[in-house]
Image 1 (spheres, rainbow, N blue to C red):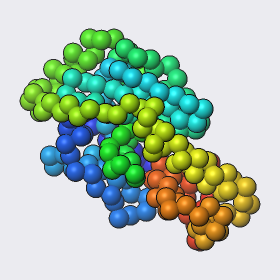
Image 2: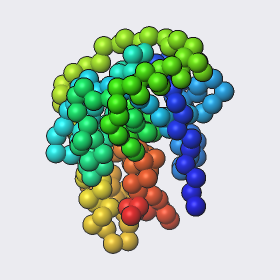
Image 3: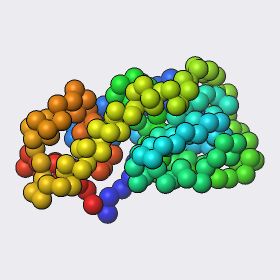
Amino acid sequence: MISRNIAYKLWISNINSSEYVKSPGEFESNYIKFNDKNVSRVNLVATIINKYEIETYSSILIDDGSSQILVKSWNENKKVLDKAGIGDTVLIIAKIRQDSGTNKLFLQPEIVRKVGHNWKIIRANELEAQYGKPEIIREKIKNEAMEVRETKVSNVSLRNKILDAIENSKEGITNEELSASMKNSNLNSEIEELIKEGQIFEVKGKYRLLK
């Protein structure tokens, strides 16, 4: 049985102010350094203040009073955000990721569940007792629709092409074969993200879908 990393309860500002570390191991999780912990998964309670959705991509912008962060999901995984709406208070279990284009941190959700507003108050009290009052970070986050048009749509299209190519190959496909057919400078970074997310894996020099 595979054990998951602990989902730590943090302020969003703890995430945004921490160093992001890329693990050297192919199947090891990336993480942030927070206090004496290596944190790759978080447990947050926050309010949704914006939502954006297209056919292959969905995101929400959440705020817990200390800061804001985007929660992003692609393809069949985007259904985890379907029932979440602007103004909802939600409990989120998610992995911490870094955008390969902008280097900004975001969350990849595993669980998103609507909860009562009092949950946010209870969680704030809990975090203050453990860490003290949070540092307030109010960096203006770009309108999601604009950000997606500028930096993500091409990556979503590239992701789909990679996944389609691997799915259509009976024996798996090599990096050289993908490079020859796609000729995209972001190819290796997207392959790395797909491996980290557990959507594909590499064996004997060939990529295969993890089903």
